[in-house]
Image 1 (spheres, rainbow over the protein chains, first blue to last red):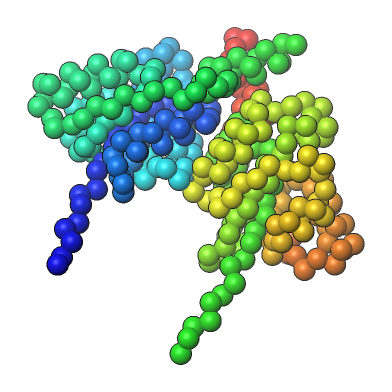
Image 2 (spheres, rainbow over the protein chains, first blue to last red; image 1 turned 90 degrees about the horizontal axis):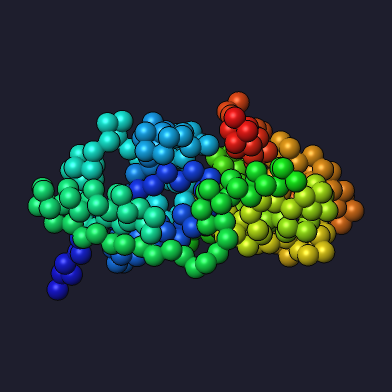
Length: 153
Length: 153
């Protein structure tokens, strides 16, 4: 009897991943789990200019370093920089994910993804990932605040 | 003919790994390469109190988060927290490394390792790892400086 090989599910996650911390890793681990055993996790790392346009400020770490650091994580199969001309439709057409994971603080992205799925009739599941615990320093802005506070002491 | 299995070389590296960046990953990758194919990389992550005693200040990220983040890197086989009562001899006896890798900014550790090897007659190679490129933001203190400067603008 030949065992039929199960298709490997592709999970897509995205983020800025500035000042990499354990909250990022937990988010990516939870995202990958959504694809079941043997899932492949592809991560889109936001370009400096995309972050600047959205949040008014470039990240601390430049985009090539953020991308390489994310790809050096065990849980990540592939990390790629976002498109210069950001478009959810184009990203989906390129990666062809089975699942798109969105973090607790990614409501904007979630809405755009839902809109794109409805419009293009993509067969994609959207998985919302909860926040991991109530730990300190699980966000880049908290880390920055701690650094600035300790400097001003 | 039975092929004799080669012993897997154990490489030991250590550091604080506060605000994880690409310089850390490159250091660990170079360290692992020193052990040849199939090497095992064990990383000692310094305790908060050890850093405070040595540098006068605790790291930004707490020790358990620094350890878990280092262990989530592809290149790392095992990351363990340093001993509360820091001693190079005890670390070497516990890990039994074939190679100890020291970074370009770890002269103090290098001297302690050399002294311990001579005193205890350990059969261990010490490998000095160069700095990776001349990139910006390959040190935690540079990253902190950038955050503080951008805040004061």
